[in-house]
Length: 464
Picture 1: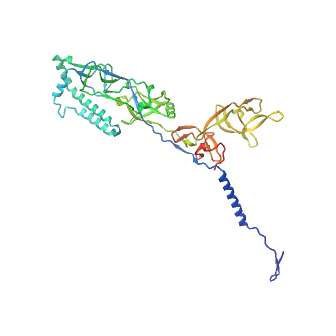
Picture 2: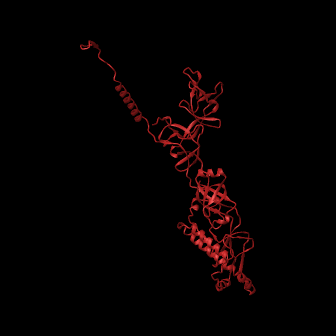
Picture 3: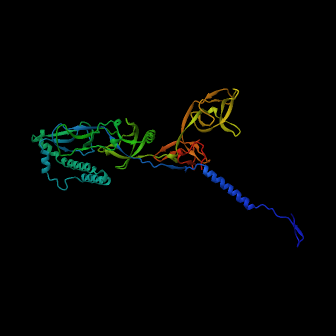
C-alpha cells in the first residue's frame, strides 16, 4: 500500500530489504553445527609428525674373553718363585719359575738386604705406571679387582727381587743342592698369566646370559712364594695371538652386526681401538650372541676374563617413528602385468571376470590401491577383490587367479583425514622408536602425520 508524504507530495513504498547480517550469521551458525556434528561423529586419534632423526643405541657391552690357554701344573712340591712378569712373552723352553723344595732360595731372599734402591729405575717406573692405571680405572662397584691388582704387584715385585737371586742358583748347584731347586721351563712360546678360572677350554657355543652376568664366577690368583703341591697349577700359557670376545645382543642388533661382517671395537680399559670379525652364536635357549674375533691386542688383556667394550658403529639415520605407530597388514598379491591404468579418472586397477544374472562372462574394471611392489608383483587392496577371483590381462585372453596374500609392515598416514596405510622399511629399532627408510615409492616422507597408536584405528577410518 502506498503512503503519501503530504509535505513533499511524494508517494513512498514500504521497504522490504533483506537483512544481510542475519544471513551471514545463519551461515556461520550452520557451519558451526556441521563442525560440531563432524567433531562428535569423527574419531579423534593422537597424531605424530614424522621427522628425520637417529636413535640413541647403547653400544657398550661387557663380554667374555676366550683365548688359546693352557694351564701348566707343577711336577714338584715346594715354594714357588716367579722370574717372568705376568703378561710377558716367553720363548719355548725358557725359565718361568722355580719350585724350591728345601726353601733355600727363600732363606737367601730373607737374608739379602734389598734396600731402598734395590729396584732399577725402569722397574720403579713400570710399577708406578701400573698403580696409576689401576687408580684411574678403579670403581667401588668392582672392589674385587683390588685383590687382583695386589697379587699382580706382589708378583712383579717378587719377580724383580728373585731376579737378583738367580746368580745364587749356580752357587747352590755347586754346593750340591741343585736337586732341591727345580727349574720350570715353558713347554711352548706364549704369554704368561698367573691366574686361572675354569674358562680355559670353554666352548663358545655353550655361552649363556648367566655366564655374561658373572654368576658364580671365581678366579684363582697364583701367588709367588707360596707353598704348592705337585700337580697344582703354577701358571697359564696363552699360545696364540688370535682371541675373541662374546657379547649378548637382541636379534635385530645381531642381524645388523652380522651384515656388517667387521666392526670397530674400543676397549674401555685403555681406550685402544681394534677391528673385529663378527660371528653369530645362538644358544639352545634361542638367545643371540655375537663373537668378536681379533688377531691382535690380546696381550693387553691377557689376564682379564670379562672385558668392557664399545662398538663404534655409524648409526642408521632416516625417518623416526614410534613403535606404537607400526602395524602389520595383509594384502592380495597379483602379477604386475595385470595392474593397469583405467576408469574415468585413469586410476590403477585390474580386470576382474564376472558373470551376470544370465550367466554371461564379462570383465569389470576394479580400481585398486597399490601398497608395495616386490618380485614383479603388486600388493593391492580393494573391497571388491578376494582370494579366488580371476583376473584377465588387458588386450589378451590370458587369465590368472588371485591365490596369495602377503603381509606388509607399515603405519597409518592421516594427512587425508582417514587411516591410509603406508608401507615402511625399518632400518633399526630400539624399545621405543624405529628408524625407517625415507622417500620410498609407497612409503612416507618427512613431515607426514601418522597415527600414534596404530591399534586404535581401522583401515580407511575417518579421523580428526
